[in-house]
Image (cartoon, rainbow over the protein chains, first blue to last red):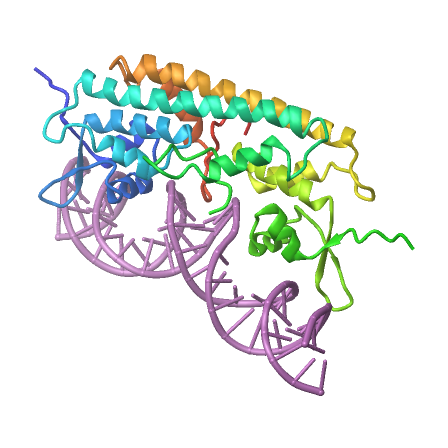
Length: 153
Length: 153
DNA sequence: GTGCAACCTCGACCAAACTCGAGGTCAACG
DNA sequence: CGTTGACCTCGAGTTTGGTCGAGGTTGCAC
């Protein structure tokens, strides 16, 4: 009986994920994915890496940094293949963060229209400016989702 | 004469905008703002620069690149102080862009939940992955600033 | 007319997220 | 055994959006 091979070469992963090999190695460096090695020191990936990669790309698309993604992936079980439940847990986290992000964007859009749009924009009184302050002072507590763009550092 | 002391030093602009002087010079280099010079070669900003700066920060917050912002600002009249109407025109542009971004984020969130969340994630069939493909084809060169979502391009 | 803060330029450096290239190894086919 | 293509490491380069520091000038108060 022909059985699907359990381990993928880097070339196969490139082909199936669309992610360049340079990026794969980069992700490995950064601890987002892992690989085993053959006797000849070549990488062999477990199938699950494809799901991880899809997840990484999806998370990047919504503006999360590799560091944040790595931290999230680190919550997946180490020894075994993640179950549907494991992924669901992660997904719920992203869902909440996405909701927050959408919310922030909508607020911003509405302010932008009513504030810049009306020509009243003043650094003293404008709510857009105040919004900046609020963002800047967002500090204490858990590290928030990186804002869409961090105004000044 | 009633010559209004309309011109601000860079220090004053820093104080009133909260943007560091290094960034101000950087923005000037990139053509986002302009300044006049005194006989002694020091920058003097027109009052309107404050509104421009607020606009720049607001646009950055929603994930637009300085290049995009510069292009948008370039549509403002060159010789005269922009009127409310000028700003309104710009604001409408952003409004559309923001709407598109919000839309894309929502779609992504829904897909993420229904796709990764359900554990079905497959690189062959998953719509998340198909969305990724467009990304992978982005060609060589350095990565663009990761947009909130690749909706507008 | 001097002291000093504020300002100037310019080049180096930072961080993220990669890409590229050089120089070498491994695996499989003929 | 030789060739070819896939793979390896490691360091340097790229873009965006800045910051930092050195070394020099300006502006204003005393």
